[in-house]
Image (cartoon, rainbow, N blue to C red; front, side, top):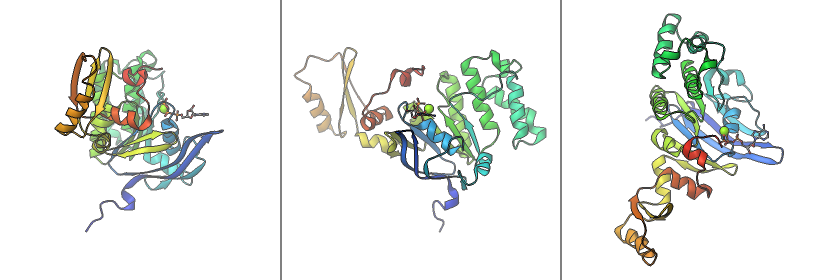
Length: 303
Ligand SMILES: Nc1ncnc2c1ncn2[C@@H]1O[C@H](COP(=O)(O)OP(=O)(O)OP(=O)(O)O)[C@@H](O)[C@H]1O
Ligand SMILES: [Mg+2]
């Protein structure tokens, strides 16, 4: 009988990881294990420490204590092996603005594991996939923010990493480009690539991730599949609208409980609208971190 996961199947193993900036404890004992081929989403409000965590795992920032192994390599003892196994797309772009999109991709494809005769073809396919064919031979300096972001992600996918770290990969992307990124991530996971992404978009974690961890106050406050996390919040939610204000009442999903929720507001002025829905990760986030999503989370604009 085969065990479901052997040690080797864990591509990210983090134990009791701590990091502080001065007195500010950002990561206060993080444990995490991610099996091969998983899309894992790290959710958390602004300043929760998501970028700090990704930087530590990708050897860009030292941890204070704890251990982290990526693809079996210790981040502190063997950073070179870790760097060979990973690819990182940060919150800020790393492409060369003086080269064209095609040149940027070609450079990476040649440095990476793409066989030489397949470089041009793969580069063209990637440009096509990210809707950059028309701009392929223009300098990146002339690209819009969204185009640069798409190129950045295309580059990190070209180097065929075993583990892909994506820090807010779709922030600022339009829905179509976001969809393209989602499809690619799923495909990569099917091929055995392990993806750790951070996101502000709960719907992104919901759609894409096999597992989700919610980071808040220095620790992981919840971990599980999106469905498991939603179940924690309860079953059906009754939304009662008074103009712009919405009151959400959690129920166990039974008729009796939904009836109780509605009767509880029966004495109030008549609502402008009412609806019953299943909980979203939004509700999970609100319940666990005690704060609603910010405007930036909702609209993808920088605060
Ligand atoms: N080099 C640094 N020196 C001091 N404080 C830092 C440094 N880097 C990050 N911090 C602080 O650590 C905390 C976590 O920052 P981090 O960038 O990891 O958060 P985040 O979850 O990625 O936030 P966001 O959603 O805004 O990207 C913040 O309070 C930040 O101000
Ligand atoms: Mg960040």
